Length: 566
Image (tube, rainbow, N blue to C red):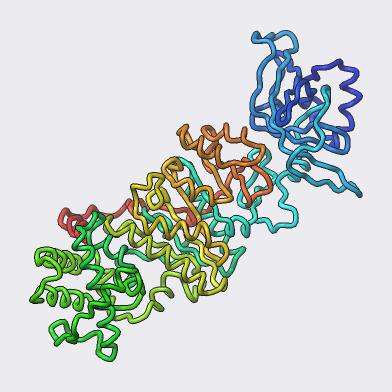
């Protein structure tokens, strides 16, 4: 039996107006405030030694209400202690409940109530406290005039939907954090499905390093793998192309300068020979023009080389040969030959055919942008870009190109196309250690995070290691869904990110269940502990290696070696 920590006569007289529902448990938990400071309060209550545990029992994680008449203060229980460390089975036991004050529900004219964060009137000592009413709990998480979309239910009351404002979540970017196996991927799938319904103009580009999202959107997405990808090498900026040529290692200074010069000259040669057939056989006569040394000087300032205009690899190789044959050498022959071998090897590598095989069949970016960014989308506004089949040395450069194109396309469309770039395993692209990762990728993603909302370019960050993610990027994500995190460093980063009065909610980060999350930020009314809705089996993400494995024959060793070689 649950009783007040005050005399029974007073309790009976004051408890009645609290019960708006006659079916409410008459033995619900009641207590009184015995201590209060600017952000927390302590409530004393009494529990029978052998009493039953009902749905209204005092428990950690529950929201409670402190009654001030027309105003009810809302608090979150984050710690419970017995006043006496010895439990008495035969009598009542006094307990102390520590709560964090979140805000207050105020009854307005006509009986209409509303919730506001912050406390205007603090509870006097002796004020009655009890478990929050269902109506007040719904008010706490009500988005008001903002359009809400249900993504699950509240953990405290499964009858109340957990709603978010998709517009604010996207426009101010969002992050979903959690350790392996807690349901991040299914939560991402759910959020994206809700987003494309709420924002019909939205295009979504998923950087999928594990090839797991293709199965999550069978009816709404186009999946692009290494075999179906066309990303011409000439769409890479110089530093991105150099990352591919030198396989992620720092280039020798001379080779980097040579590459800059010959690429700029090849672009100029292509423009000058625009009337020629770009599909002319490789053995045909090459347009001969004197090497324009001024192009190299312009390239040093980052001008011509960064323009996404076509050029031919055979022109690059021919220009290197011309440099080798100069009477007065500008570069060491060894460096020139080394660079030529690198480019030829790259061009002939079957794993890189997505860059070279059909590159010169395209003279504009139009077909590439149309495929990747779904213009028009034909009912499939999501592109799942499967990075798992690409060589590891090229992944960072490809991510850089895609992030850069997403921003440029959104900016040039003047908001007509809204683009969400979702980075799965985001710590790979924007690591906290600035000596790691690929600088252009970091810059491209950071540009979306800092400037994208002005042009309709949005960022979604998903990672299991927030401690390894660039804190600048995370700070730009104004809505955060924190799922279970066991690492103390990761938990501390989330505590630093939360800005409202419900920091104690994050004490539950190490113990929330699968599909549960603590959501806070611009996209929600107030910090809430919620459970994502369950998706249908055909809407769940699944890694390619795990799909349809049963019943398939084991491939031979030669087949696997051939796949490893691309």
